[in-house]
Length: 93
Image 1 (cartoon, rainbow, N blue to C red):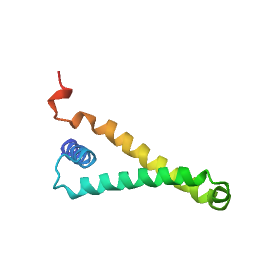
Image 2 (image 1 turned 135 degrees about the vertical axis):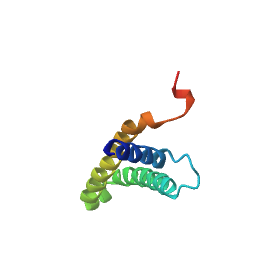
Image 3 (image 1 turned 60 degrees about the vertical axis):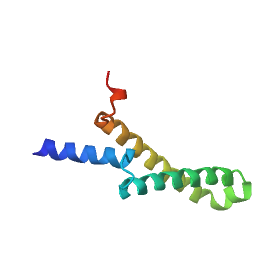
């Protein structure tokens, strides 16, 4: 039972991350969250090059960077963990 539940969770996480079903609102939310996080990261990197902003908001930029790296690392780890759930025949010889 435990193995089956873990497999179900692993497959569900794969489905959310890869969002193969356009009707899957969780997959859409995940995609939109990641896109927004990437865009905000680009903006933050640009703003951080302005010396006055870097001095005034350096701590905020730093914490945002920690948050972003954590989120991207978790996403990457989940992609590695769930990679064998891909049923696409292109990945199977």
